Amino acid sequence: MTKLEQLIDKLCPNGVEYKKLGDVANISRGGSFQKKDFCEDGVPCIHYGQIYTKYGLFTDKTLTFISEDAAKKQKYAVKNDIVMAVTSENIDDVCKCVAWLGDDEIAVSGHTAIIHHTLNPKYLCYYFHTAMFYAQKKKLAHGTKVIEVPPDKLADITIPAPPLEVQAEIVKILDEYTSSVTALQQELEKELTARKKQYEYYRDLLLDFGVHGGATSEYEWRTLGELCKIIVGGEAPNDCIRDSTGNDIYRFPVWGNGQDVYGYAKNYTVEKDAVCISSIGANTGAVFFHSGPFTPIIRLKVLVPVSNSINIRYLYHAVSIIDFAPKKSSVPNMSSNDIKKAKIPVPSLKKQEHIASILDRFDKLCNDISEGLPAEIEARRKQYEYYRDKLLSFEERG
Image 1 (cartoon, rainbow, N blue to C red):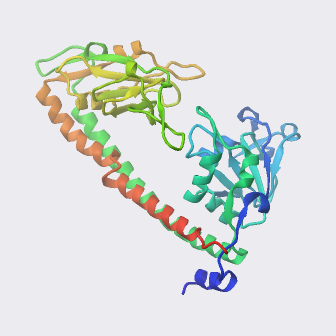
Image 2 (spheres, rainbow, N blue to C red):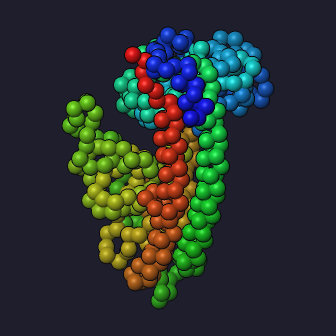
């Protein structure tokens, strides 16, 4: 019998009590400072956007500060509080959180919930990333373009509340397991990075036909405007049907800016496989391959070959080495004309197919989630999540 099993058998032999979060925590909203208020030194702070991109599950140091003046009217988290981001662009990220373990009070931005509680902070933060919590937050979330879970609604979340000794033992186990899984994932990611560099090396080598301009008997440089029809993605379609739970269901996938979402609009449907380029935002210039049929939406430009003289997979690899320079503005962007002017080398169709077949092998190894190193990384992640959720599932008292 493990130590955890012994503790559960001794301290809660009749099951674990489940409580409402509101019974073990005070939940308040964050303050109002913005990223423009950051300064070199001052009052430590956490901005809600950093929870998605900069922090892990726990931290005892902040990455940013605001001035004393800006901090006067802010809301603060103290040691062991959970800082949760309550708005996001998708249901998966909303309610992502970080446990504050530092000794100082920290200012917390808007779009957050500050959870001041009586549980083990790591235990609670681990629970907030389980499938059990996900199922509950999904019922509380609302919105379309911006998903929100109101902080006051979090009080209704049900959580298992075993004795603190049990919580501490679970945290010890998960900390050790997290550390070992993280180390393994880092090794796999290093290997994946090396494979990607290998792919890029062979891609550049195989597509190095010479300097732009001019032509030979082996190839010619042609613009994408000559080779392809450029389709501009539109607004996400509204027409849909509803499933039994009220969720939208669409007949074809909608694809925009490299992210899969769901939707259908007949006017925009691309029936064939195509090369897609993100054309607005931080991802501008990124190149993706997408299988048809699909519906491109805003932020996406789609390249569909207009003749049989170009192999679609060769087109994808050739376009992926073009350095699309986005227009410098508050929001980077790229027009259809910018894409039409770009040139790629076009050898014979047989040569295209040969190059594409070689590069596809490297690309598959690097990017296909169903096999290769990405699959191994994904398998480790799922194994970790399964083990974590098992540790945080208890027989309920009574």
